[in-house]
Image (cartoon, rainbow, N blue to C red; front, side, top):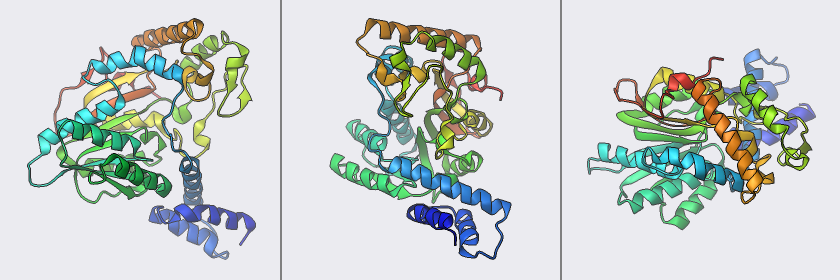
Length: 373
């Protein structure tokens, strides 16, 4: 066996037991018997396993997965929060808690706890906060199966649930949601910023449809822009125009540690599964589910408030706030005109057999916001 193969196997060992069987078989064929030539399918599966190992390694050390710079919170509190409050919640935690609460009211029979699931839960931090919020609202007879492939993060989730006093409700479960086979039915399934890490979206959505109760809900907050969180050409041209206004010190990429005099549209999907099929999420959801709520937002503002360049902006600086205000105003105008499409959404979906009226922001329906690729 080559040194490269040995190194790959060593890297995969910590996650191999969680991989779907097709990937395990390919690894055994590819590296277990040198005389057996690898098929094209084996090569694809080995590449998948290597990418999965990279994904697991990236997130294993991240105790704060969703931390964002202060300028993001300036923008979200001023512009995003009022949109959310239109629908009765003010932040993502309240969004999930509100629709789990409604599902509990619809489904609770008193005989057993209402079953929920969360896909790609990571450290279970969102799920623990949501569980605490449901208990604060007087709901205790529920459980959330928190599914993630990263055992290190699940261990942190167990500790977090125990510290918050919700161990009875939070059940961390090891599993790869690229090959998820649900054990039983759920009243609701939530996915918080996890679908853009899924390569096998069609299979996952089929499994979710199968796992949902007939009146169940699929509750999602995620990114729906171009794959790898890149900009589509029509948006990139506008970002370049705003980029030219930035002081040179604001053009240093904190995450990639490089100066970008011209904005470099980095493809995040080259590492792990980040944004691997983001642009396919909304079209595939439209095909398979009915929407109860659809709340899309943002595009142009993303690079200026994210982890790469957002740290340079001072939320207390008049110039910095005014710049973000102008980018946001252009965002709103271009999305309303249909020139660009949103890169984020919060959505609540039902099985196709359950007919429901869709609540939307103005004319921004799911179909209108799905960019033709």
